[in-house]
Length: 86
Image 1 (cartoon, helix red, strand yellow):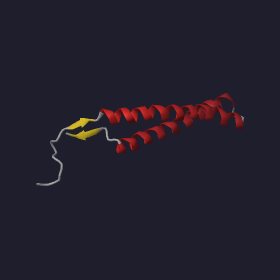
Image 2 (cartoon, one colour; image 1 turned 90 degrees about the horizontal axis):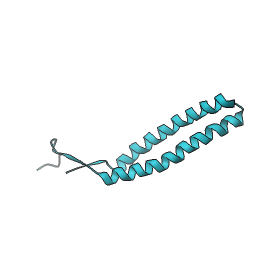
Image 3 (cartoon, helix red, strand yellow; image 1 turned 45 degrees about the vertical axis):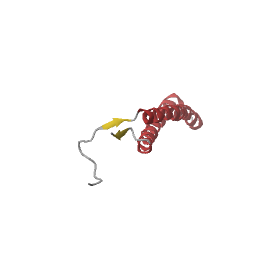
Image 4 (cartoon, helix red, strand yellow; image 1 turned 90 degrees about the vertical axis):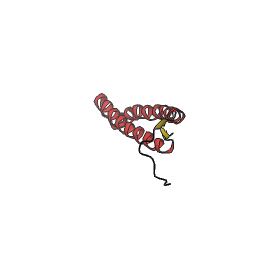
């Protein structure tokens, strides 16, 4: 008898872990994207970039926030796996 996994083994969705990660992602996402929105305005006003600068910095900060959220969900799915073997 070996400890090698059976290739035909079915995997079951772990809804509790998905719910935990999704709830944390919603909370963290609200903070990250809120900070991106406000930060774009604040930095553009500090540098005197005008309306186009505000929009540009918001887009840049939003993209950075999206990268943060993708990284968070990838790391969280390693700690709280979305599937488990039956």
